[in-house]
Image (cartoon, rainbow, N blue to C red; front, side, top):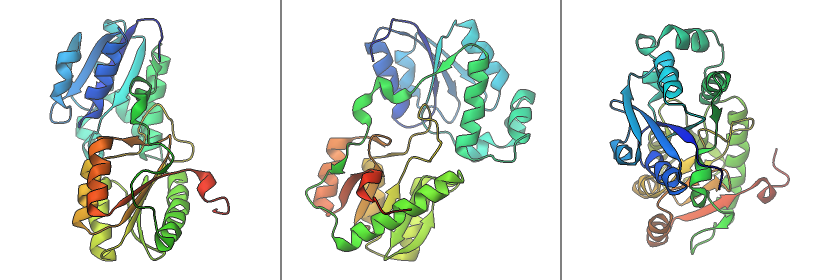
Length: 279
């Protein structure tokens, strides 16, 4: 991405993604205004910020006023935020309460969409975080030495179909499958907790599928995985993970693939073309 230098506001959550995005933004010569949240934000992002301010979670008016005061043109959301804390009404200002509590659908995609709309109304364009680190997108095809066997391909296909249907309902991005049986569906708890639950019920040889939700905004909340995910899979003796290629973030790719090869886990970048007869 090579646009004219401008002022970009980064709403930074946890883990490494906001730091990588900040590095990409600064490498392209933009001014970077970062909003962080105590207990949520990876503070390694701070050295890359031209301006940094720590805010209280759920104070949407405060966040927007801060970004506007710094003449932010574009907004990026990157990093993890614990949704249960976001949804705690004690943390929300009146603007957030009216937006969130006035909706019947409060899935991740719905909430991120309405928050994005508020930035747009204030004249700030929400842009795709991965445009500043495009190499993070998972490529298509088998990414490890070992390819899925026949059983794993069947479970990948089944998991893809189930995950896409759940995604249409804005439930989650990830499912765990074994021999055509769903052993866990990601919900409020996040991927790692869903995986551990799925492996507990499914036993060894489970297959994991993560997909991009139909209708989801590509500007925010792409599915992600990496070395930490594969370590959880190894602990649970899972054998294969399929993620949606070009629409999923693959962190620590070199180290993750090396770990997968060492532990016998196969990693596949999937597209709809892999399963032409799937629902």
